[in-house]
Amino acid sequence: MPLLDAATKVRENAYAPYSRFKVGAAIRTASGAVYSGCNVENVAYPEGTCAEAGAIAAMVAAGETRIAEVCVIADSPSPVPPCGGCRQKLAEFAAQDVQVTLCTTDGKALTMTVAELLPGVFSAAHMERT
Image 1 (cartoon, rainbow, N blue to C red):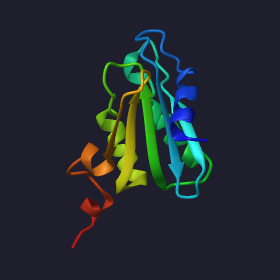
Image 2 (image 1 turned 180 degrees about the horizontal axis):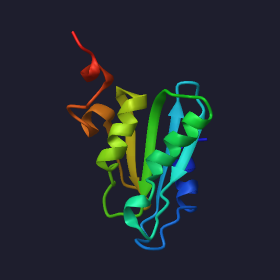
Image 3 (image 1 turned 90 degrees about the vertical axis):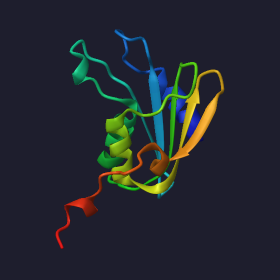
């Protein structure tokens, strides 16, 4: 299944009664499997979950840990990038050159790499001692 199709389909399941801003995300892993997620809001806003985080959780629950490609879609005037937290989550499981395609429901798209989304990424290498 193409990633855009998977992200578009799961976006319809988003639980967004407060913002009405539905987001869908799909990731393809190194094995070729596709996992998707949608945003899930909560009346206590900080307790919600982003679409990208949901897709990553589904991937990890299935026993995979390497992202090969990402697609995110929202009904916005321009392609909407992942929030800062999701950028860090993507960088945890994706190489810096992995492509992230950001789409709108009316057909606009922007493709960036994980490195472009999160320059100066905090990584496990920062935790090593010399």
